Image 1 (cartoon, one colour):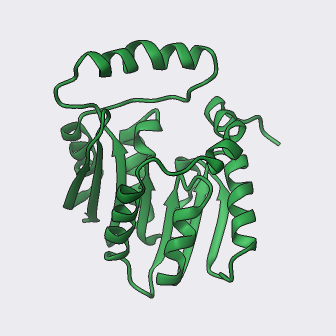
Image 2 (tube, helix red, strand yellow):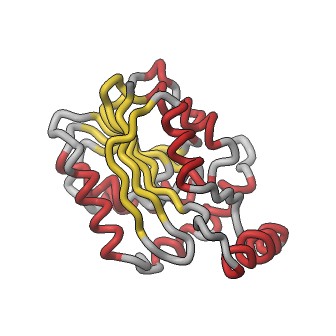
Length: 215
């Protein structure tokens, strides 16, 4: 077995704690889930990249034909499969894979989801271009991404320039790259998508929810 990347090892190491921690903003999570459901059809084939412990994939599965959900961390997928074993669902497959390991020759999807992922990808532009190859023309790419606040500010500077780098040196944080909302949306459009809906979730580090249709 190939050695895990630093980020895969990090997320695997914390997977049990991650699974046990409550969702910090349940209202925001449920709003995102409902908006995402509204773009899905019963006959759709869905890919979720960066699925974590699989909760979102399992909640969406009854509303679509097939869900393939992946995460780079084996520990996360182990937990996702444990959850799947407790559900009466036959249309969900979990697998270990990074973004670029998904082969478009294996087929494309009506919807590709990437919630809380893009700010954790080293080359966001390349990742989005690859995601476009996995999305059927006319299909949707739905993402929610933590972004840099427009005004910056002392707290953001402290987090992004001091706290996170120190934690990364100690092995207590993964790769992170916060871009502005404008940069994020421009990158999505450059990859071959037309943005059809956006929404914001407020916080010290705001999140941008984006639905984009493959051209």
